[in-house]
Image (cartoon, rainbow, N blue to C red):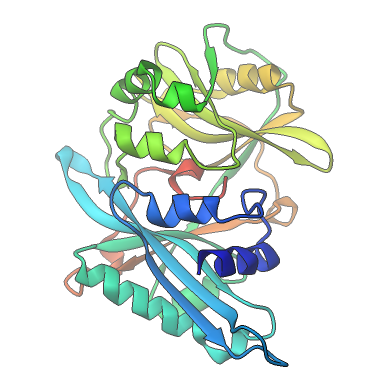
Length: 309
């Protein structure tokens, strides 16, 4: 099934992590330290005969969230919801979604969060019971201007993940107070998330701030993508200067940050939605009949909290 899902995702949602094997989906669906994902697949007889054709695939993965006063919540993240081109009107998307929501709810998961693109957002809301929290803010940061010189830069590698480097980083990261739900980035979750196959990550740290970045390109220009910000001191911690320094270190034309974290202050240009390659909307859905969608709110949600990179 993972091979068929890889082929389907490669055709409908191209991603460099979808290489010619199942390593990425196996990591995402089966290796999560919290538990395996809840997966659904819908096959039909292939036109002209041959092996059955996968036409719809829906998955949510386990995620633990932390809240005010040390609260913890066993939730989930919407990972992949895809229907093969030409089969969208058969409602496979809706049926498979309700099946995984029921299974995750029966397993004790309280709610599921996700980042939906502009095309799928209306279907999530109208047919599948989600609530739109709002579009994820996007900022573009130029490398020009005042920067910081006190940052260390470490590329994430297998040896670093297995060393004391990750342990030291995780011991300091994600310890600031939050006013609503935020991903609970424990050491084991960070080790798993930063081990994503076919991806490259860097950790940048100073005394009061840590950031996780990756690199991509836009119209052949090198771009730094800020995936996560971790304040290591009282917030809001200014991060613009650090991002400028990291962008220069990556030798990028500019940096992009998407999401929100009230404990970190980032100044940059807000690009028009039409210039954003894939604008994303934060959506939430209760998996517990006793919890109303309106009661689900987030303090922090950034790119590392989902699975875009």
